[in-house]
Image 1 (cartoon, rainbow, N blue to C red):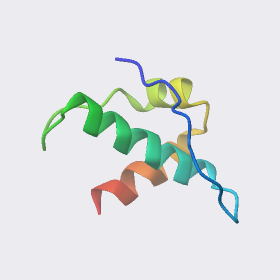
Image 2: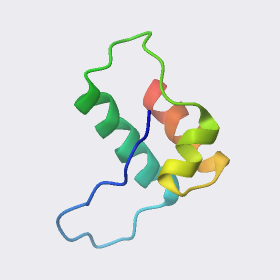
Image 3: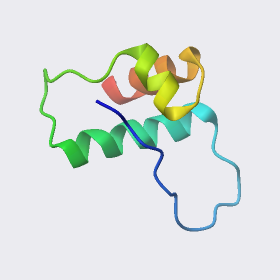
Length: 67
């Protein structure tokens, strides 16, 4: 499974953090793939590679989505 970086549309007044960007991309992946509770995401390492962000950003994004 590979997540490709989506194009964020619209203007924002503040730049998004890496974890916010990762969270938006992971959420988009979940919605577009039709994942359900209990379905697996790509590995942390794969998410880092696909999204071009650090492990800590991916961990924070996943932690926020789980909450």
